[in-house]
Image (cartoon, rainbow, N blue to C red):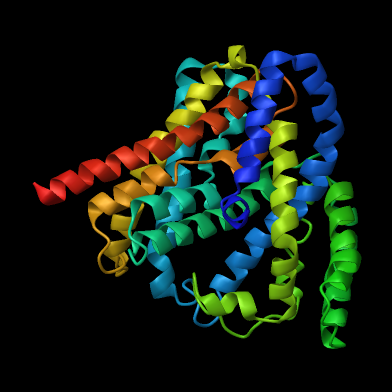
Length: 370
């Protein structure tokens, strides 16, 4: 069960259930998905993005891998390149062959699914190989930029900046007051500032799934980051870490319903949007990550010791698994219809990057022994 939860296999189970169900009986699947959609996408994903925001925030603390500019340049550059190149490829393909309505989905191939990418990386590389933490840093930076893209480019309704500013200010001030008075339980931060932030985004026209992103850094937290994979991380008792420990399992259960509510696409809906998303991910990610990581050397950045160019290529292919966040971006970019169905299928098929990464690693291994 721990393996299932740690590797987001419940999400995979929900996704497979949705795909099979939609292809057997689309009508009944559509009814169930309709009822699940709001709870899964607008409420449940609040906690998924909160845990992602927690990883991003802690990585910037003293001792964290993104704390100093010199440490952060390579993974940040790789993340930017790994998002810009897929978007450019997607837009170029849409511009060349259409349909024009697909251009709004340019962010879909920008995403990297941390859980599945990390799982594949651990299958490919030895436990101490620098490619694994480098991939995770790229995915964390990717998530951070993805949150910005979601907030800025994909409003969920008509914008109301006064409502947004007023309620969000109240949410932040309440969180600061709770922290100042020494509130250690995470529940008041979720129920008070979290609910206000959700209302601010929902009523202000932005996606409410980002509700806890501005609240997470305001919870009491450790002064330093212990680093990726440090076993002491699981024993830290500060508010932010207790929040993560409590929500880790419920979020995985929620991801089952997210997959169930969003992934049901009949195979006949495969179309141009599917191939454009796949091309952006499978070509754009490795090309963008490699070019940007090497370009970062021009400003004095260095790749981690032991990370070779061939390893960087495998990292890029592994990061091509968009899956969860790509699916979410698709639902944010398009209403129900052909464009949404096609791009969803592209997000689902991005899991083909997993066997491609395994094949690339075997080819690299043969080269080393040649």
